[in-house]
Image 1: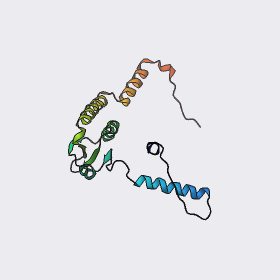
Image 2 (image 1 turned 45 degrees about the vertical axis):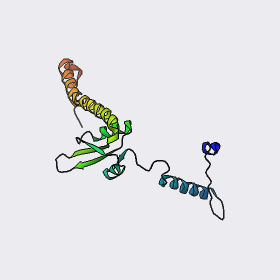
Image 3 (image 1 turned 180 degrees about the horizontal axis):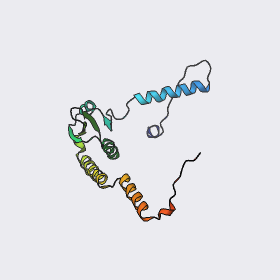
Image 4 (image 1 turned 45 degrees about the horizontal axis):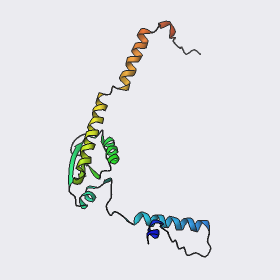
Length: 157
């Protein structure tokens, strides 16, 4: 019995008049499709999902409001920690705000996510703009470099 569990074997039965590579490929595709639709281990979805799916799991939900500009950053961090979450958009405010719902049992991971999210947002705000740095360097080059090094190009026909 233990060997059967360790070495899983798949029996694939295809009814055909002539066995070709094309029929084998179509049979394997059908099997892969069957495996995708069959929920073998966990009946619940993980990661990003709808609010209805999140509440259906019966573990309660907590919410948090985040801004529009940092939704992708937040989703990246939430996937990193493996938290189940749902995002809703509040269209009554301009620009729209997003509310993120979590399972209540993910409170420890939620605290880590909030801390890392806040750190990254503060890093973004403190980081100088690339355009401002470029403007400063252009100004420095124009004032401190010799003017005879630059030549004007004229279009002559």
